[in-house]
Image 1 (cartoon, helix red, strand yellow):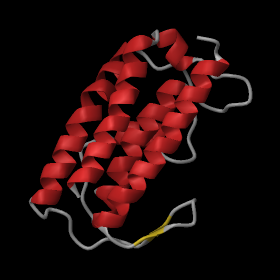
Image 2: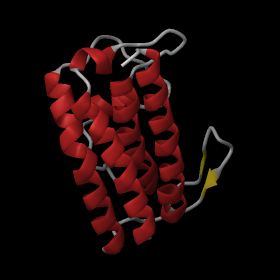
Image 3: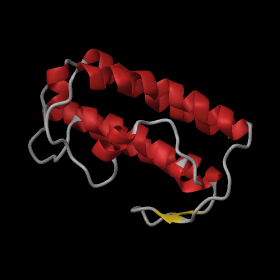
Length: 153
């Protein structure tokens, strides 16, 4: 699974670039024809990775429940995110990959609860979830790149 974690690290480095290169105001802008913003897409990717890997194997994971409630599938920004939210997400972006990779190596993940994604892909194992998560994060990286163009930066 090591190459899959390396691919995830590459996508997460792109997310970090956007979090550091853009102002908080720009991260919070919701472009026309979108229902969320750059910050939401990045935080959503972080939260979803935890849900797909930990929660689907019966584990809690490492993301605060408040962030899960704000950024899970089907949510959208209700108000601008602040500096404290930015700091939290930036801290989690790399740390969670390291923890997940270590937990995978240590065989922490138990039986996987089968999950049908909105892509129509069925996940039957932790390995399926890790591989699918990379595709999901790449999709949201694409949204981030489109939103950056849409807000004319």
